[in-house]
Amino acid sequence: MLRLAAASLAGTAIEFYDFFVYGTAAALVLGPLFFPTFSPVAGTLAAFGTFGAGFVARPLGSVLFGHIGDRHGRRPVLVASLLLTGASTVAVGCVPTYDSIGVAAPLLLVALRFLQGLGLGGEWGGAVLLTAEHAPAGRRGLWSSFPQIGPSVGFLLANGVVLALSASLSEAQFAQWGWRVPFWTAGVLALAGLWLRSSLTESPRFLEIDDHARVPLAEVVRDHWRLVLLTAGALAIGYAIFYAVSTWSLAYGTERLGVDRGVMLSCIMAAVVVKGALTPLAALLGDRYGRRPLCLAGCGAAVLWMFPMVALLATGEPLPMFLGFLGAMIAFITMFAVIAAYLPELYEPRVRCTGAAVGYNLGGVVGGALTPIAATALAEQGGRVPWGVAAYLTAVGLLSLGCFALLPETRPVPVAAAEPASG
Image (cartoon, rainbow, N blue to C red; front, side, top):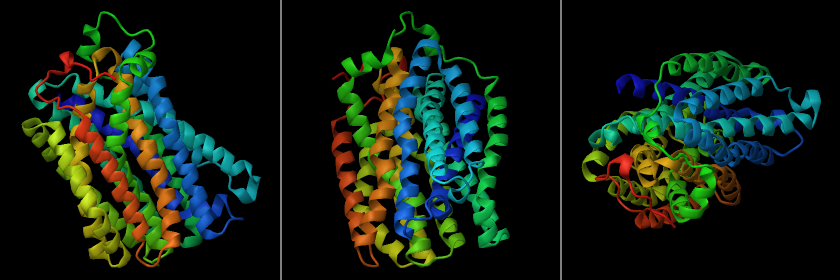
């Protein structure tokens, strides 16, 4: 289990590195480089629009790779999704800017971001299911939380590389070529991930299935549509929190508040470090007290914390900003540490790869794709303290809280025998 969990964590970290490095670049440099004819705010909005294309692609990736995972096994999904995400990320680092090829530059950016999202849409389902379906029932939450640490590691890698480049290069050098280096690094990381995953064995739960679904998506839509909608709505606040902190606040702090890029990145990264460290602890609590209580507690905390977080961000001071981000990350991981065990337990094994991944990634469209765009637009309409952003995040939190309240508890039920909550 330790070897399997470590390989899943490493692979997930690499794929999320690919995804997050784009978000950081979108917040810092992609607007002026690929949308130079726009105003600064419009350029940032356009860059966040290309960022959102990855989220739109993720549910489609869930369908594509979920079909492979439910028909042919979880292991092939891990290899194919990593190859696709890694190759498209390296290609982003090679795209000429608007000054070189005109409107083709942002179009290429959108296409490659779409491919990134397609690969990541399959990654989460494959990595989580392979770990969850190997894990003993009493510690499924703990072992399944290892892939959930991967996004924190990937985020820290992506922003650490950007921070190091920002410290060693001038603004002109970073804008000219420095921003491309993190994308090129993805190629080396992808090769390392493929090596790590080459020795993984197929899920025993998948091998036990006698009658594989012919068209998994059709069964999910027919029998589990209500569950998919509830899980997507429930997970929206987690995505909204994470990308409000990691992407929108980075752009807002550097552009509107005039905070140094390194200071903003350091505050965000410090909060993410704590989030990653707390993930196994929250997962253990989920094994002991149940998945649903942890989700309700984290979601309730998020609803209460959004206004204080925005107020602390608006100070522009490092310590208050860090505390605001930290509270948001603790609320986030209280929910998401147990999600990797919770979602697979909600779906029957024959359609689990498709159902869990589609629900998870639809939540990303609602919470992740829209939040940087909506927050940027709302902040532009407000004063120094963007209360509209806090109200938006609170509303998303209330939606998620209602969805979590309608989902059943799954912890006592072994994953191989869990009854689907059909619609």
